[in-house]
Image (spheres, helix red, strand yellow):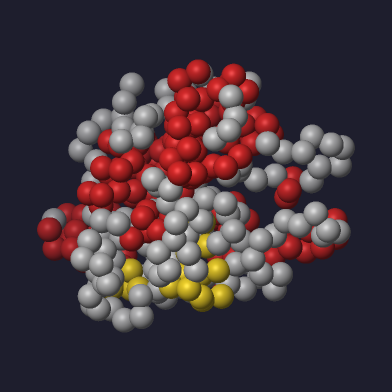
Length: 298
């Protein structure tokens, strides 16, 4: 039962949606990401990152939009597979709150001391992270070896670690999924997205995307509830959006902060308990030293 519960949480967070995650990544028209030094949307830190250009433009023709949408599908292939990684850092590329950039840990060399004392070291690489984790588990308990060999963990494989995650969307999805079935959560999320999409005739599916914090924060709770959310969940999502807008939460922090800081900052958000935050840290941020000993809140 516990395993099924964790898997449901992972799917709701988008951890097993590689095509969808790739489709949400911002890329250049050629579908290629570029390394550059950029600032995070909510008060950046100037650390090296992967940058892509904005996709939407009022002057772009429908045919051009389709080409750009197809380029999004190449995103997971153009994210560098082999990158620095760490046990206590986020190991997947993350979209910034406005969706205008994709950032990933790109520290030049392994075992180098970070520029700030509270930033975890990147002591391994994405092509070795899973191998080292499995070796540790087998050494701790050899009985796990047959299970590990039988069930390959795509999530933490080099390919899985190249999947682009929208942390704001993942956290919102976690709130939406609380105390409802998977089908109900999916329906609510679809209706929620529709609230922010153009309702004109001929709207194409590829134009739909999860709204940004800046779009959600000014909305009334009553408006958000029309997607099927309870009043409390609508308040939670509005409050979460406001924290991203104000810069209290940002992609740079989620990417580089230690596990304890991530848990401390996110559990301070109304609607996000310890279990939900630990599931987010593991399945969305791909942090390896996360093991929830609690139970899912009822």
